[in-house]
Figure 1 (tube, protein in one colour):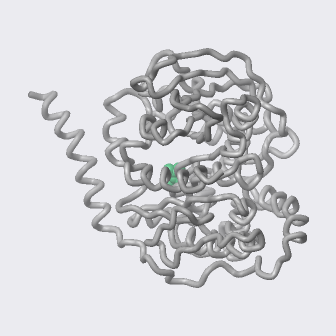
Figure 2 (cartoon, rainbow, N blue to C red):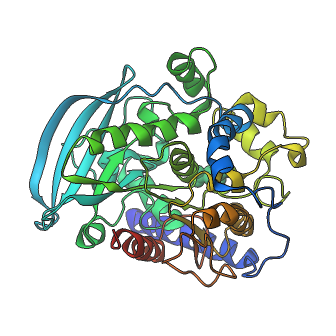
Figure 3 (cartoon, rainbow, N blue to C red):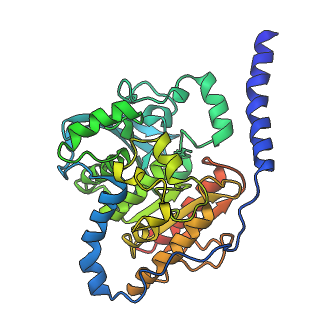
Length: 407
Ligand code: GCU
């Protein structure tokens, strides 16, 4: 009786909560309610844009993210076959043990068995690590001790988290992804820099002794270290490598794409402040809020702008422009005001002049509601709040199919 009540309570409470919050929050307007980003990028010629790119990357390090660790390639310590016929025979699971500048992490790859040529690959950083992403199987390494978010432990805690943040918050829809012909490469960046202020600060000093950066820069660097492994293996198509991330992982995926040209496509879902959303807006999560709650994510210089966010000399449309002309999908939820989809749309518009220098239109849609999967910058909205839902993955796969099938 008591167990029945507990289960009913665990199921009903989050659903009620999500429903109430969702109804209480206004829907994000589909058309712009403020001007696009300052067109600081207009009129730049391609040659001068490309000459200035490294200096712009450095400004993002100086003002926002801090320095990433040095580009020492990943070292493969071990590589094992976990299961040749997993997911009903659709995929093959392998696991690598990697040494990244002296720190250990694991890379789980799942390759589609139907492939007859090098496969396009999606690199995913998930909130709870590889073992959870693969349904809790014991033969997949868990996160390093101390790197683990408590909400990821055990099934009972998992139930409400999944209900609030969506079915795919911890486990991607692997079978669907394999059926579309993509390989997955899963890595848990908390092994390298834990998502906790003190532990992160300690690790960042070890990784970047001269000018310790923020965790997001280090997590972006982890995406690049996975590319090292994939690019050294003929089974993966090195012209079709995508970086995927949700929220904090989306900020890292975007930065990884901006810094590393080997990443061919980025999906930054609900990445918000410090990600795809303009900072100088006063809407959504403020610099003050993000740098006080997550002091370890950014360079100390970013927190110094908390009282004067309008004064920041660079903004996120310039970070998006560093991807040009590679495809970027920005995902959003109609009630997710915190991640401020309108400011992401404005940033995408602001980056588009640089895409046009390469003969691409950049963002082609005129409102947040007319997702065009074939555009080089696209925005895909779905109902609801923050999280990863089935509708999101439909959009991600449509975008991937539109771009990677054309190679
Ligand atoms: C918090 C944070 C956001 C972040 C999000 C997430 O809400 O304020 O900036 O994107 O966590 O990573 O889920």
